[in-house]
Amino acid sequence: MAYGASGDIEGKGLLNALLAKVDAAQASLDRSNTGAASGQLQAFINQVQAQRNKAITVPAADDLIAEARWILANL
Image 1 (cartoon, one colour):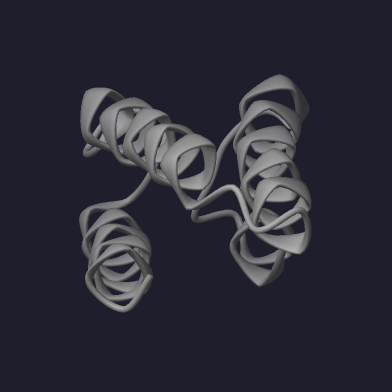
Image 2 (cartoon, helix red, strand yellow):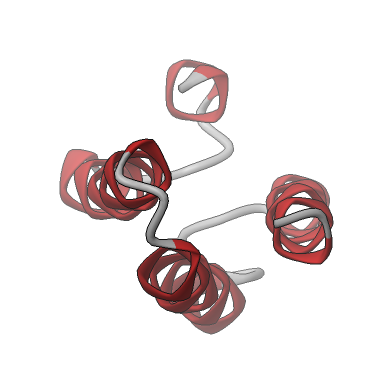
């Protein structure tokens, strides 16, 4: 994830946790399980919101949340 390399997300643990949620959502979509994908994306959004302006810069958090919400709206 580019935000990890740029320093917009601090900490490998947080980055790995976010990537795990995205990977899980993708796996759910691959199985046509949109309900599970929706929950996983919401968990991603919740974690990003919790770390906004802490371990994730405000612009990066806002961008990640907007992208996840766009995906949710288009499931």
